[in-house]
Image (cartoon, rainbow over all chains, first blue to last red; front, side, top):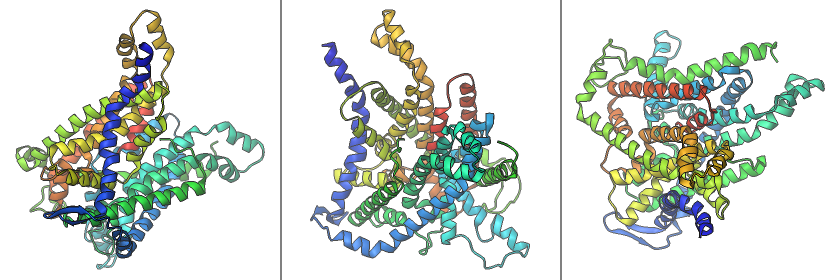
Amino acid sequence: MPGVRRRLTPYLLLLPGAAWLLLFFAVPMGFMLVMSLEEGSLSGGYHLTWNWGIYPTVVEQYGNLFARSVSYALATTVLTLAIGYPMAYTIAFYGGRLKNALLLVVVMPFFVSFVIRTLNWQLILSDNGLFFGTLKNAGLLDRSFRFLATPGSVIFGLTYNFLPFMVLPLYVALEKIDRRLIEAAADLYAGRAQAFWRITFPLSVPGVVAGSLLTFIPAVGDFINADIIGARSPEVVMIGNVIQRQFLNNNNFPLAAAMGFVLVAGTMILVGIYTRLVGTDQLTA
Amino acid sequence: MGGSRFSRWLLPGFTGLVVAFLFTPIVVMIIFSFNSPRGHQNITWQGFTFDNYLTMWSRPDITGPLLTSLVVAVVSTIVATAFGTMIALSLTRYQFHGRSIMNLLIFIPMTAPEIILGASLLTLWVALGTGRGLPTILVAHIMFNISYVVVTVRARLIGFNRALEEAGMDLYATESTTFWKVTFPIIFPGILAAALLAFALSIDDYVITLFSAGDTITFPLWVYGASRIGIPPEVNALGTIFFLTAFAFIAVQVWAQRRGGRGEEAGTIAVASR
């Protein structure tokens, strides 16, 4: 009898949490797929008509919005990598005893709500706000200059908000590198640049991959930055904005569900291509 | 290593600039929390006041959502921490079939775009015909918190010395006595860190909550709605209070770590804070 109990224990421990994740994460994904194939209205009810035709419609009608969201998310990933790598490198290699404190400094701003942070950026970057207003009053900038509601402003907001998702995995990967390998490279007459590109950087690739995914995936579905910093301008809205509006304002559930599903599938395909190209399988959380 | 201009000036200088960039909106938030604006437009400095920190407590439109958020955060933290800790224990100490599927089930919700988690739950509520409100918000928060708890507690369990438990058993302690007297106290810092993380994620969540809220308003939802007509200065005052509270918690964590244990929990807190 104790043997049976022992064998059952891991499953009993898993049961409540796993059931919760299955019921409220995995199952809803299925419901979203089913919902996308239904037709009807909120008042009249929805009926499953296997309306696969909605998918070509979504791609045709919103293809440019998907492309825009992917390009914003890619730009964000590249920018966070360019900013985050030197920073993670500095903390990992020159942080000394201050390493942990420095990491906490990096994440501290993110203990203020996402919404409040982004609202304050809007305040800073608005047309006559703290930053551009001051420049304009000093005569350094044309009165008509506008940063809010431009693609650059949305990418700026995304980059700010997702920077720690890049810095932390990079830091973890860089911190793990055995310093003796770099010393060995120097002993073998490698220059600093050569040692970096042939030893340090390749060993940090798992961090680059993890950081890129943790930045790209949430960025591509984001709608808060386009909403607040992008001022909901039609030129900068992302696919997330439309999904949210169709779900919550227009109650067009089948269309919104189909868009959500295209977003999930598209993201997974892109992530698959990326991990295949980079060829890393060290993606454990 | 030292010596080159690159490592001595350029890298630290750049890092300093990035830190300044990261703190810019926080500094503005703190300054403008003391602003006394005329009307709704809290965009230019009008004069110093401490009122924003005092008046908000007598405004039910602020305290109501704040209370709702606290209830959601406390309940979802307790449930998710219990469920997540059990999963972490199961994954680190037993070999069983379905481990890789379980790992996937934990990993995917952390990487999926939030809008997808929120929207798919909404389709479930619509299909089931349930209304939306406090219970559905709670279900959603417990769901997204479980994964983060598992990852945080597991980090603590992986460095765990099993010999301590064996010693307990050798001394005729039962399995449950061993757990509560040996295992639990050792992994407790990890559980605490996981709970703090879950609380922080829950109290700040906007996107997922939006889809399960119905007419219920949590604090982030209220902030978002109120900001449509200009950021009320009370928002910055509350943001400042949140910031200082988090700062105090981190300080305690760092202090606890200094006394022993490793920095992994802080790392996961960091990764997950959005």
